[in-house]
Length: 69
Ligand SMILES: [Zn+2]
Image (cartoon, rainbow, N blue to C red; front, side):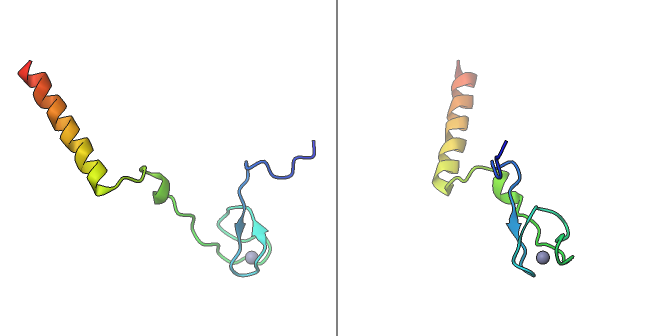
């Protein structure tokens, strides 16, 4: 097994010493605090306001159609 990096352990670059380190609270090389990884970016798929409006409109139309039947 010679797989070095298959994407299972994404590394980040330490802003203090510039080395590739595993995502942790502290850098294992220089001991400085590492910047927090952004988590909010993956919470929701990116939608434009027009797409959100159309999605809401579609839901309302569907609800009205179900009520009318
Ligand atoms: Zn470091």
